[in-house]
Length: 88
Length: 364
Image (cartoon, rainbow over all chains, first blue to last red; front, side, top):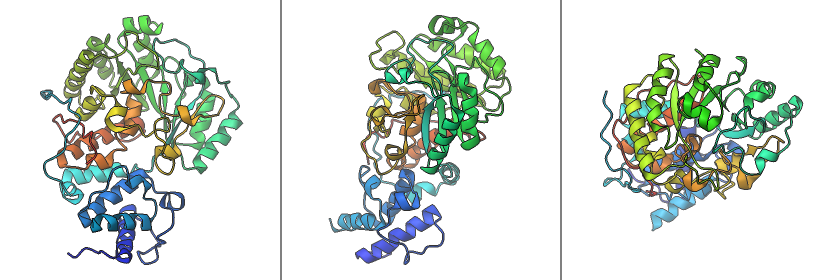
């Protein structure tokens, strides 16, 4: 399976994982605001972020640093992080 | 069922040779089922509340009577507490831990809390019965047999009175706190409690700041405690709410903070997510101090092996434990135990991991 590398594609994938794992309703990957604060606005917490990070690790074959994922509180931040990991 | 042989699990790193994908770990049906069971409770966000600064007994090494919290004035106004609970709910708290000194001495306030926040636990010495209409989990502290309790806690016939107050009470969990002096009494006490069909879990005495007395654990007492825990878990599987991994992490030579890093505000500067963001420890005057905020304030963090601390510290380390099936099974057992101990109505499943494994202290 080809892994998305462009930021826009990664944003969509991150949104898709969030929606699937957290059972978010009334939103699609395309309509998910990439800059909304996931903690303040959606109410996800550190366990949710850990779960999403694990699923994204699987998909992209990268490793999240345990100290980093709690700071990745928007879809765009997560996508940028993944992009940087892929590039390195 | 026999207790597993205890290997040397005092190592602090346990990195698997193969990096497992999370999806492959979850491909195991038993792991998947337990994961789906426990993750439904990820919505729990706790804070703790001192309900009274009075106590009807005085225990050597009690953490409440260390530090400034013991001097906070008592707010006994039910309306003030109701207002606080509503504010807590509004900021996202979903689980309350009511403590003290002795919260049973403020039962009316406990009731107010329960009316506003249905999920929670009360930590009590069990000598004053908490009314039935306060439907929280009730943790009854046990520090040994009755002779020891009289000596260390100044209260006679303690176990007998605790059992009388909470006989056949589905809310009740008896929490046996291990000290170096009472390891040899735990079987006797567990037999009595199991005979009354009571649930039991284990805690570790964790020294208050500055405490250097005989209740503080040593390497030898940690080893003996672990053996006792594993033996009782094997012999009383229907009454002891625990797991092998609980025994490992709570008797490790390193305290919980050194093993995993405590997520409570007192040791965690992060404010954007998790307990660093949401947790507060309210004193009896309804104020709180971030610098002191943790589940057992004024405990020496280097010595902290407290069951309450582990419930947050170990549970929050999902990411670190999702390295391989064995480690993840152990973590799931720990979380399953924590939910059974703290959440009324949650039924513990069989432990998935019957071995002993070193904690994955290093981040993957």
